[in-house]
Length: 123
Image (tube, rainbow, N blue to C red; front, side, top):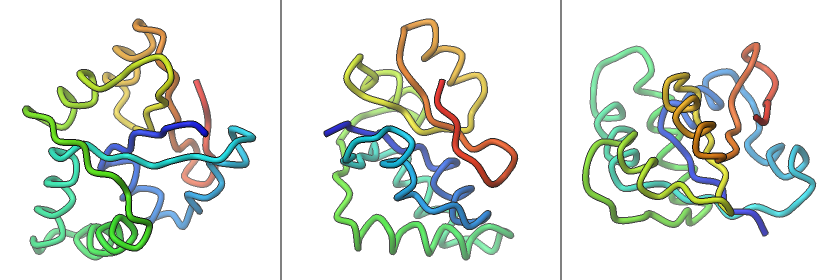
């Protein structure tokens, strides 16, 4: 079973563009366990409570996190810092943040990202 660490921007983008997160299992040909760092969860909660355009997708993301019983990892710092602290070889990070993806690639960490608003890619 692969562990996939979710970033808030990836989660909200997938919901916004109607990309089924279960397709990650097909992409990796393996069952996955989703994880989310506490700072990324806090970003989703903050957006859900705002009047910004994507707040409705953030609310759906919170429902997804709760319904799938996604494990929340307690880490200090910003969401990106938390992801970099947690990133390890047996973990795949799901993010659309290009600078974060580059930092992870240098460390040899695989990333999953949304490309073309409809497909998932692995790098």
